[in-house]
Length: 313
Image (cartoon, rainbow, N blue to C red; front, side, top):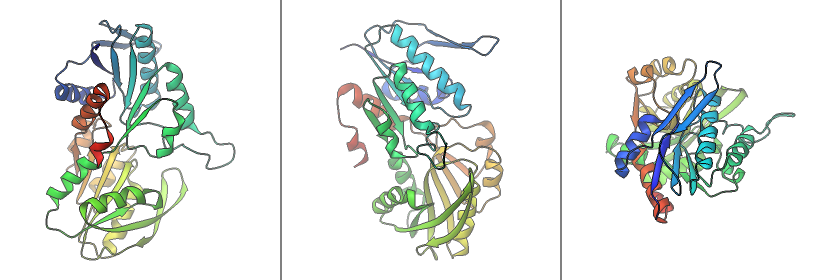
C-alpha cells in the first residue's frame, strides 16, 4: 500500500501539525507564495506519485484567497500523479448560501462545490456543515464529521451536577440540539429567531423551560455574535441560572469579540476548525477545544477502510 501524506494550505497550519502528531507522520513539504500582483504559486517539494494525499484547508476569512489556494494545491497534486486526493475542509465557506432565499440570488455553495470537484478531488471531509444537504452537491464520497463528541465530553466535566437545558438558536438547529440533549440527558428549548437581513436577527420568543437551569446554546457557527448575545439575554430574562454557547466554527467577524466580552455568556466554547486570532485568544470568555484528534482518527479510518460513523454513536 502506498503511503499517506498530509498537506496544508495557509489556513490550518497549527491544526495540521496537531493532526500529524496524532498520526505520527510529518506534514508534507509545500511552498506557497504570491507574486507581486497577488497570484498564488504552489510548489510541492516532495514526490507524491501513487500516494493518497489529504489537503487540509478551511475556507475561512479571507475566504476567496483560501479557496484559490485549495484549488491550486489540488491541481498541483493531481499533475504530480497522486493516486487519490481527499480535501479536508474543516470549515466550508459559502455554506450559508445553500439555496435561493430571494429572486435572482445565487446558490453559491453549489458553485463552490462544483469548482472544487472540477479541480480534481476524489473525496471530501468536512465538519458540521451549516446545511447538511450540501453533501449532495458533491458527486464524490463525503465524510461529514460532527464536533459533538468533543463538546459533550467537555460539557459533562464542566457542568457536572448541574441541571442542563440545551437550547437551539432556531428551528433549523433542533436536530443538532436534540442529539446533544439526548446524550446529556438534558432538557430541550429553542429561541424563535426572525431574520430581517444578512447578519441581522431578532429573538422574539423562547420555547421551553429554562428557569433555574444551566442553559447551553449549541450551533454550528458564530459570526458577528449579535444574535447569540441577544439569545443569551432572552434566556436569562426567562430565569436561567447561566448561559454558555457551544459553536463548532468561530468566524467572529466585525465586532464579535467585543460583543462576547461584554455579553451575559458565562463561556463561549469553540473548536479550532478556524484558527483563532490573537485578539480571540485574549478574550477570557472564549475557550477553544481542538478537533485535531477527531480529524486524525477520521483520516486514519479512511486510509484503513474502517467505519467513520461509529465515532458518533
